[in-house]
Image 1 (tube, rainbow, N blue to C red):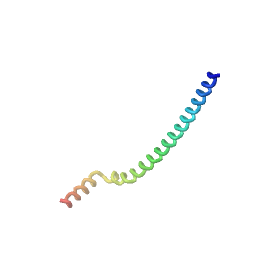
Image 2 (cartoon, rainbow, N blue to C red):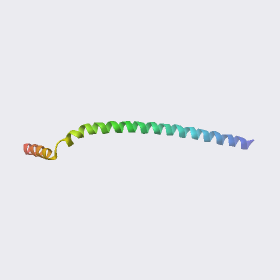
Image 3 (cartoon, rainbow, N blue to C red):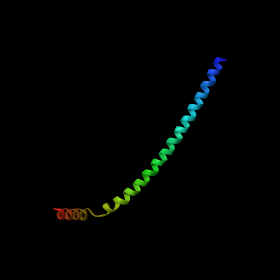
Image 4 (cartoon, rainbow, N blue to C red):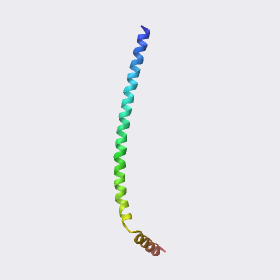
Length: 73
């Protein structure tokens, strides 16, 4: 009878570990979804800020920076 009890405990313990693992996996998947959503949002914002900078031709950008520098000095 003792070995049956030990076996039952082992089965219950394994089932509980399995449930905890499933729960942890579900939490990990939810976290990954949130990270992916946040990354998309940040990339979208970064592009909105960065695109105007790169839209300017390099020569114009250089001239503009030179003018700023001359005004400050």
